[in-house]
Amino acid sequence: MLKFACPSFSRIFFLSALSFISGTTLVRAQTDTITDHRQTEVYSPVPPVVTPAAKVGDAPSDAVILFDGKNLDEWVLTKDGTTPADWIVSKDILTVNKTSGNIQTKRTFTNYQLHIEWRIPSNITGSDQARGNSGLFLAGTGPGDDGYEMQILDCYNNKTYVNGQTASIYKQGIPLANACRKPGEWQSYDVIWTAPVFNTDGSLVSPARVTAFHNGVLVQNNFELKGGTRYVGKPFYKAHGPSPIKLQAHGDKSEPISFRNIWIRPL
Ligand code: MG
Image (cartoon, rainbow, N blue to C red; front, side):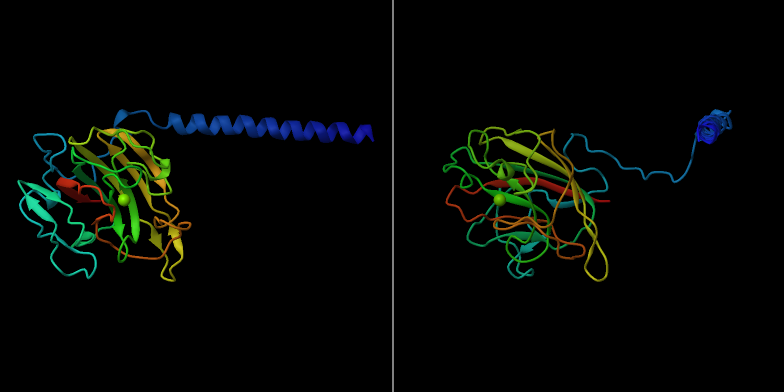
């Protein structure tokens, strides 16, 4: 038997060696076909020209301005999707009106880059989730809090569950850092949102993903969502199309927070 085993082993070794050598040769051959630097230089498609703002954080030339301190023309109440938003606009800032509920954009979006600034009032009271709670819904998919909420909360010196702290994807994505400023100081979120994709039968093709910076600090890094964010229960997906951006009027008793400089770039 040994007489037959040895040639068989030799054949396998020989074929493996040949495969390794030919593989190596193939890689070398592919590399060697490029002999001129121009072969790896492309000239189209040409990226569009976007003029950046004079100050980092301000809207570039192609942004859709959602709030610039003047009015709420881009916003409606979530409760019916048509009534003009009645949160308080004063001195170029927007303050939550807790009695009127969530507001959302008239326009709908799919994938985008978004900038928003918010401020917890310096006289904030309360603790845990009842201290400056609001929220940025990256897509509002229905009434109330339906959608995907990136939490807004005062966590400068306030303990709560970590998957519900500032810059969490509520009850799904713990932020990579706590980058909170003190109450009374303006803070920013810069978000890159990739919307989920659904088949026509409603089944999921690809989940939503989010990358986000809080005050310039990376807090969500291409995080994959498991579905809509939920207060009670596990997340799941329900098919939807382009959706509004929504801001939360949270029902806690703490002083209302404010917003300014909100813009978006559809991608
Ligand atoms: Mg919230």
